Image 1 (cartoon, rainbow, N blue to C red):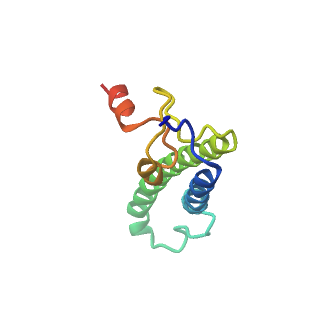
Image 2 (cartoon, rainbow, N blue to C red; image 1 turned 45 degrees about the vertical axis):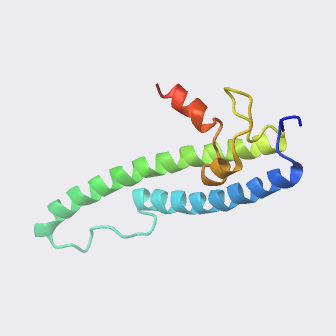
Length: 126
């Protein structure tokens, strides 16, 4: 029996749906984080008493910085998911870029943007 070299079109469609669902969620999270950083919701400190304003501004600045970092991380995840969609279209999705073997379905269902098998990833992290 020959070893499978790529996933079937039906399997790729299953993975595509998983990725599209995650993309939708991630884009919503990204937009919420971006809005909180830019005060798009209009919630600022203008009505706060001057005594507490300094403390609140410090906390707000820290929160904005954290949300900015989280937004950056979310955008990286979105780009990885979008790249996975391109690999699906090219029918190279699920093939380990290091070994050329198929990444197990279980791994791809959990980490749909994976480009390495667990073994190759562990080897890379050494």
